[in-house]
Length: 411
Image (cartoon, rainbow, N blue to C red; front, side, top):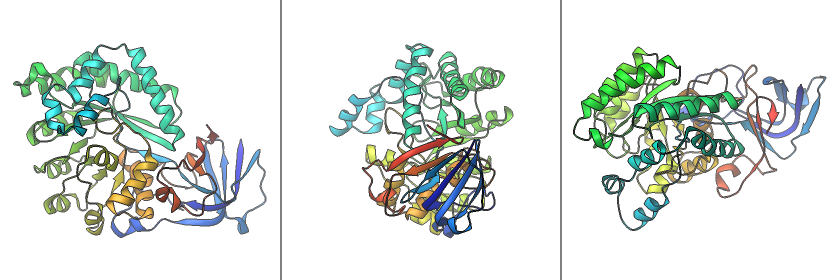
């Protein structure tokens, strides 16, 4: 099947060669072609260029994209899509003045979600998660990472990861699974942290590895959750099972966690609402991608990742949703891109780079996704007629997507 898109008003993120990521000043450069064409064969991009240079070619379907913008689909490298129910009562608690920590201390937060998940069948968890995945795909997400972390028990974590595996099998887009058993300490281990870490390392990880259920390992490195030393144990254990680390860090406090993650070759460090000069220095010239989650900051009214300071220091930055029931009940990457521009003062070019090629890097798929490059997968967004790609963040409350294509097929 050959599909030819013609008269594209703006074809964004065009790269002649595959790149891993963009950093610093490079993030402000978004290569594009105006009045462009794009040729797709089966599931791959096979050609693109200016309409004035369109060669004679055969095709099975032609789509006139006059007035429309075409760009690679969003790569959401941080989600918790697999969960049960919702936590809207905690939403009201926050309105009434309770903090994240206060809600958690009352049995809410992560422990609340864990209780619900452990009481729910695997089939029901799958059906709820499937609806969320369908929704984010319709909103332009073409690659997604999904974490466990609401089981907090051997069977609960395995149940979540098996649901993610089933989603992988039933959806034809990249889904990366991350084992987040170290999301919080279960009540039974509140005074025995090492006992729970031993359970993760000695019981959960071997079973997860045996069933090939996870690509990455994660931990909530934060004051009141997992310390630097505890997180280092988790990361090192993951390494032994070929699971690189993607770590929650610096959401509320800076406790030298970023430097520890970098030293252990973490693929990404995520949240970063609080970032020190020392953290920035630790991230320079490393393989670790900083990931910002601006819709989390928006929803629970905490600081935003200091994107300008980080980019001006030469760092790369990715954007992701943090889709979860407690602090970000939305997987809409369009809102994330808009919020990054509005609240973090990222330019549209920087935000789109962060949500495509850098997002792909943060989940290990930048060789196949995240840019318009010959040989990459044809996972793309086709907007409705708009004046320019600046409208994507500008019209933050509007649905500007006309079509989403996954592996060369409009869904």
